[in-house]
Length: 204
Ligand SMILES: C[S@@+](CC[C@H](N)C(=O)[O-])C[C@H]1O[C@@H](n2cnc3c(N)ncnc32)[C@H](O)[C@@H]1O
Image (tube, rainbow, N blue to C red; front, top):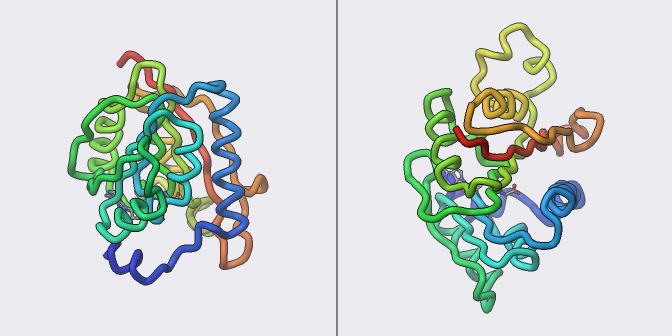
């Protein structure tokens, strides 16, 4: 399915709102980490637009995607950048080699469906994180009529629920949470409001 989406070029990560989301994340990491970003793992690299931005800041970037088309697009975009490696990975089922200072799980966890799979993914990311590392999660909020409903906790996805779940895990400490755009409201049918959340690794 993700290969079909990638081949169809269904998402536009050069759009102004997506570029603003990337810029917000990068500015926050700048503040939290200072100039030395170290190594980064990017999950769901899609077409490598954010990968390219990480490559300017990190000593090493490992970019992963379940889609071979997405991996190929990221490879092409990052051609000649020796600090970037691209790997096909299904984060829901596979472990990750190596330990990283930064892990970016941006707009990918909404596709990990169900609490058990999400908890497994949390453990996978914790195992791939260096002790002082930072995990970045961004994801779309649920539609307003679900996000405010009494049954919202029964819906296993949505940026708020995902960030809540990670915030409750002993392996993570939440250090940032905000909305993009700031209002937390969708901008028409074209752009769903996002949660941007950041976590540091605890000793657990
Ligand atoms: C919505 S795009 C997000 C792109 C980029 N991370 C961003 O935030 O702009 C989701 C990407 O995650 C990939 N993906 C979905 N499920 C995955 C999984 N289980 N493991 C690895 N990649 C996955 C898709 O192929 C797609 O390229």
